[in-house]
Length: 115
Image (cartoon, rainbow, N blue to C red; front, side):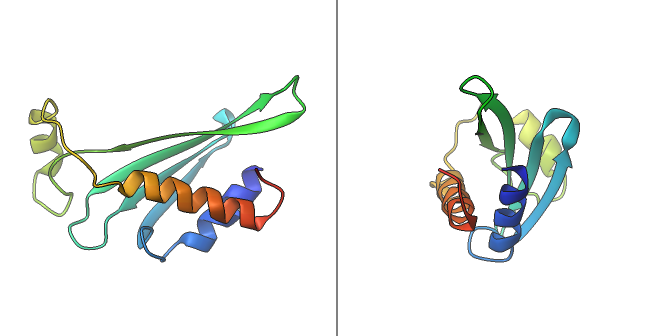
């Protein structure tokens, strides 16, 4: 499953919602860390995909955690500091994370064998 998600990430890279993306593997924790920036303003969204055994160890479950990193896009100078100061300020990502996770899941299912 791990390899299929890597292939799915490779297949979506450069496409809509995944124009600028960085993937790192954490083999010790059986997980993938995915950083995705929006095309123009470069807001940073982070996704972590962790693979765990389930059903008595006979199946693998991919658990996905995703979040936007701040109100201010990373293209702005000092964005990390400003975002820390504004951490209490609620904001919406206008559904980008949900669409990204759906696209990634559909692509992984298309790669084969995943539900």
